[in-house]
Structure formats: C-alpha cells, structure tokens
Length: 355
Image (cartoon, rainbow, N blue to C red):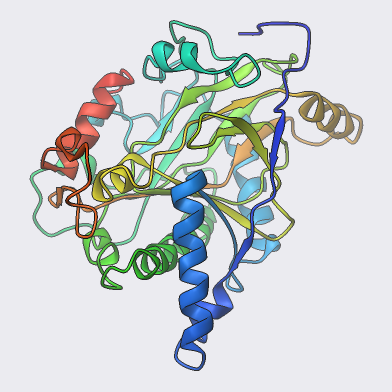
C-alpha cells in the first residue's frame, strides 16, 4: 500500500473561512448577517465542496470522549461478531480489507503531476475499518429496509449507546443546520434539503486505521473516492492525513482549527444541485506529519488507532434525487436522471463491493 519513500504532501493549503453557527442561531435578530453567512456556505460548497464550521453545541470534550471509546473498540474487535454483511455492512462493524474504492483511474490519470493521489490503480481494498450506527428515527414504511436496520451494540461498552447518540446527534444537527444554510445561500426555500433529510439513514461512521500495522509513510488508508451520501461531517482527528481535491482537480490539505468541524459534499448533494456542487474527492494517507504524531503517541503509550469522528447524513431512502430549482435547467442535467435515494445508495454500494 506504500507507493514511494518520499512524503507526497499537498502543494496547496486551503485556509477556508470558518462558518459561524451563531449567525444561524441569531438569524431572526440579524437576518442580513445570516444571509451573508449562508452565501459564504454556498460559495465554499460550489468552489471547494468543503466547509469549515464552528458549532457552539459541539465542544472538543465531546469529540475526545467519542474518539477514546472508539479507539478501545477497534483495538479489541475481531471484525466478525459485530459485522452484518447480510445487510451490506450498513450497521455494525466493517473489518479492514472489505471496502474497495470505485475505480477512478481515468480521472486520476488526468490530474497534474503534483495533484495525483497516492491511491493505487486499479484500486485495492482499504486497510481501514468502519462502524456504522444509525442516528435519528427510521421511517415507518420504506422500500429499503436493508438500509434502515436496527443497531449493533457491543456488550463490552455499557456507555456505547449514550456516547454514540451524543456525538451522532450533534453531528446530525450540524448537518441539518448546514443544509438549511446552503439552501438559503443557493436562493432555495430554507427547508428544501432538510425536508428531504427527515427519516434519512444518517450513519455515525467512525473509521479506524491501525498504525501498529499500517503506519508506514505514504500508506493509503482510504483510497481516492467521493462519498455517496448527502453531506459528510467530521470532528478533528488525533492524526493528520486527509487530502482533498478542489473543483479544478487541485490536491490540497485542509487546515482545521481546534474546536472546528469539517463538512464535505457528497454525491446526493451533487445530484440535487445538478453538479453546481460536486461530491468532493479525498483520500487518507500516512504523511510525515502523521508519522510525527505516531511517534509522539507511541512514546506516551497512547493508542495508535486513527479514528475519524464521521457522520454521513443522507436523503431519505424513498425520496427522489433529481436536480432542483434553480439547478434544474443547468447544462448537463441529463447526467442526473431521477432516481430514488435508496437505489442510488445500492448502486454505489455495489460499486465498492459491499452490496
């Protein structure tokens, strides 16, 4: 999984504006400031597919509690007992070398020499683990029961449900806020996205990478890919290593200030905006900075599992994905024929060998 002996770090650093959720909270008192902030959200999503935000309801202590529990879980899991392959790993644990990124070799080959990912072509199965935990209520009736299954609860962790729901609800709420702000910024009705997210299969999806085994420089932990869902949100990881690609195909690292969250556009948002927002490509690798943190944590006797505090927000499975006004008349809209979100998810899961 390691390509070279040299650290292929990004040449471009994205220092994005920080979206202030207080503008959302105080939107009735200062609607002008709120609308400006919403325009900033829309601009960041269009140009970069990424937004950095600060939510006063999310404190770093929440993230630390979640990360610590998940480190303990991944350190002890056998990857079998809590796995549910019969429902495409959409709840419970996904062990390493199970998920394979889609083949994007043609796209990768068209990138400039300084912007190519380290991911192999053709893609190989990722060494990362996942755990999927459903957040929020399930629909009473759905055509897609296998995408809306009951959760898996590891019995060794009496605090599991409380901690997962604590972090997951905070991440889901932040996605709903961002969805409303994006809609306002795009001159849509404020509930355009959020009404379609109700009863969605929102998945708290911590990713685990074991640096006891996969800590070599330039190891690819998560191959070059986009996310299949609506919006993906993360807290700050204890290890760096996330590279992203801009709309123009420039590879970049993102500076995430302490106490902030990062949100990335997924394929469902690309669909609903007819490509005005593109699903953001990204990969996770072991960089020189990652190696430095590995050595620091090893010396301190701390966990060497890299855990991402990720949530995938989704459009409800039975909703139709189709470009919405004002994006329904864009050139190239024929690339987005109407499809139920559940069918879109199933197609994507087939492509990454989980369905």
